Image (tube, rainbow, N blue to C red; front, side, top):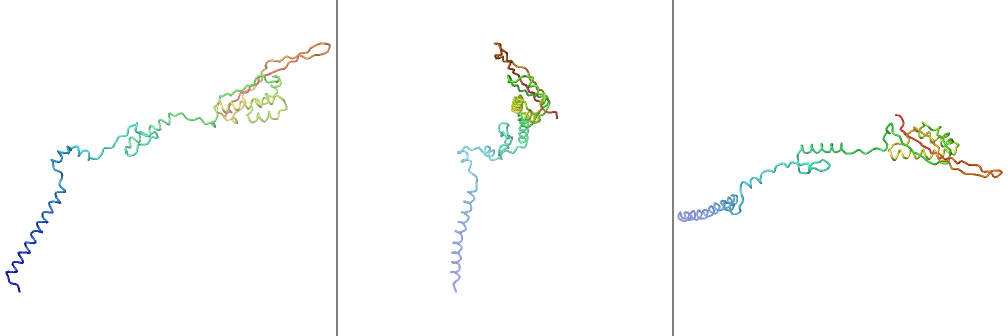
Length: 226
């Protein structure tokens, strides 16, 4: 058994050892708190930072308004902007631009009534009387029907009329953007052209005049009545 004096000494030694540990823990706590503390006003003065300005910069940024110049040509709002009013405005601008833009003409459109397409062949080596005998068959006919009639007409002037008809159809398609099959012959006529005079010898020293006739052929096409 240890004497009471030794026990007292052991208790005092244990207390002495426990005191420095508690002091060390107490000292460690203020160090952690010191890290969480804000910067001193002296440091702020040295850096020259204004607290009010820093607070404004940290605030949430305001929504940027989309100007007409910032919009895309397609009418969409740039990425990163959320402005429904601006988006609606761009859609309206696109619709107005589309309405003002010139529309492309369709080559397969229905022909307008009253349009006249004309083709003429001059100095054709046939007489006007012979040409009229052919053109009387195709007056007022459709283009397809007139082609069939001329193809089976047994006269030399029919070849000149076929060429002229194809020329008139080409003028309607390329110059007036019409459909050749939707046309009919509104007017067709043959006018007299200049006459070439030649002579041939005859009996007893005489000479006989030869008249070589020419003609001017004209075809006028118009759209069919719908």
